[in-house]
Length: 179
Image (cartoon, rainbow, N blue to C red):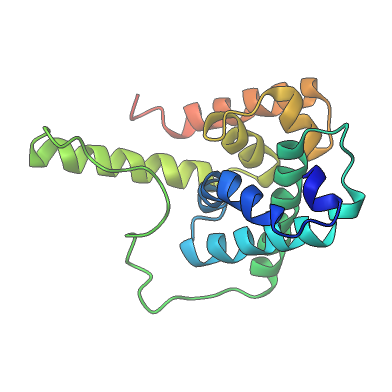
């Protein structure tokens, strides 16, 4: 990032090579849509480039990167709420971005069970309010610490801990029949 801020535009390629895959997966889990995730991943790196001069080197880069992406996710959800989209193939659940591949050694009944559980977990997470869903995805899927998540969401680590607790509690309630 220091090279990019100093005017070496090619450094953006290094940043994208290092962070693009994880960023796409984060956005895919947050949005549940591959096209939106790809669009926002590109927009995230565009914003990194545009705001390269304002990056504070004392700050952790990934925290800044996820903060940009998180803001874009919130913007996209606001946009979706104002512009509802009804898909022609609404019944298709093929590319929702959740790791629901069955075990290769499992029988067809077990594979179906795993897929059904994964779909229920995905729906339960998607049903959480954004203030609970975002820290949960950042903690569980992206492996960020509570302090890092707090920096991304602009709140304290204690607030993140509280949100994670409430998110897990709600998921436990919604998924109690599966457990």
